[in-house]
Amino acid sequence: MTKKISRIRHHVNPLADRTDHSFDGFDNDKPIIVDVGADRGEFVVALLDKFGDSKNFIVFEIRIPLAQQLREKFKSHNNVMVFDGDAGRNFESILDPCIKKDIKIEEIYINFPDPWVKERQKKRRFLNEKFLKVVKTIISQETKWVFQTDHEQLFDETVELLQENHVQQLSFFSDLPYGFTTKWEDAKVKEGKKIYRLSFYLQHNIQRVAHI
Ligand SMILES: C[S@@+](CC[C@H](N)C(=O)[O-])C[C@H]1O[C@@H](n2cnc3c(N)ncnc32)[C@H](O)[C@@H]1O
Image (tube, rainbow, N blue to C red; front, side):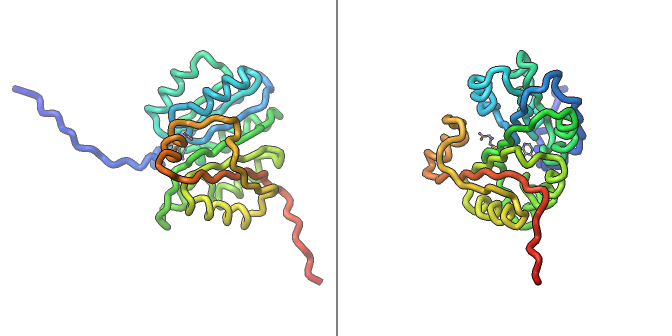
């Protein structure tokens, strides 16, 4: 009797992965760079080339098989930690222990995140109002956040979100942050897409103007 192989493909919402992760931090006090949605890890490879082991890297990738490949790729670098699952869900539990040890979170990169354009999906965006409220309680005002996308609507709505949530030093820039692109960015440029880039810092104490 031959075995019949079923090829039913189940649609899986990766954000339904509810695995919780925790991290005790690195065994050194070097500053940390965070890459949210690392895909094949090209950005971190380039940063490792530039900084070597003078910095630590926290890498989030929601797709478990990709995260496994990233772990394999970076296994000889004990300054790189890869986490699977939703970065937003795990952000606080992974970063807070590092912060409590007084380790500087230097930069956080959100490069070409999924746009989630439908109204009901917008809450899945990595940068959303609820998330900003939480990170304001843990991430220092000195941490630089960088957001890059080829998706104009996502960019415009993210700018609005950041303005409404009183971040500081919101600035737009056109040069590549570290002078290199990933295959994803290259493909978008080849399609003729414009790339939108911004950076900002969180603002913890919002000074409200008193109306006399
Ligand atoms: C469009 S790709 C961009 C990849 C890379 N950042 C770059 O600039 O080339 C978006 C990546 O983010 C990952 N991703 C999407 N949502 C995520 C989430 N909530 N947490 C972690 N990774 C996520 C996707 O699996 C994908 O690998």
